Amino acid sequence: MAEKVRAHVIIKGIVQGVYFRANTRRVAEEHGVTGWVRNRPDGTVEAIFEGEKEDVERVIAWCHRGPWGARVDEVEVEWEEYKGEFQGFSIRY
Picture 1 (tube, rainbow, N blue to C red):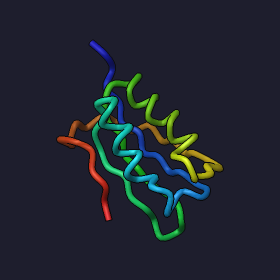
Picture 2 (spheres, rainbow, N blue to C red):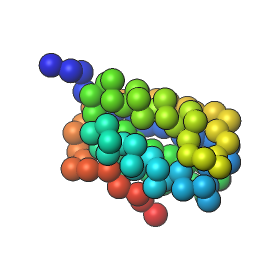
Picture 3 (tube, rainbow, N blue to C red):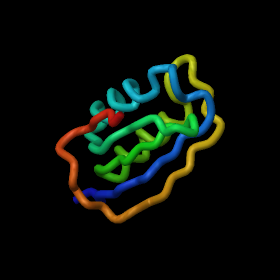
């Protein structure tokens, strides 16, 4: 059985106004990862990813590139205890 993980991620750079949230949701759903993504007032994007470790790592790897038009300067990842609290992946406002 695959290990389930949870990651709290902050993405820094030019990551707002470039469809980062919509594309993060698409990539997460493609990999079966649950959680949420949102813009923060400081210009960063914050996300919680839950799922199988390999799938969560793939979504985080995508966050290092982001969608066309984004410039990702830094991705902070904090691994947390898996909670299994999400039914799907959502954009929070």
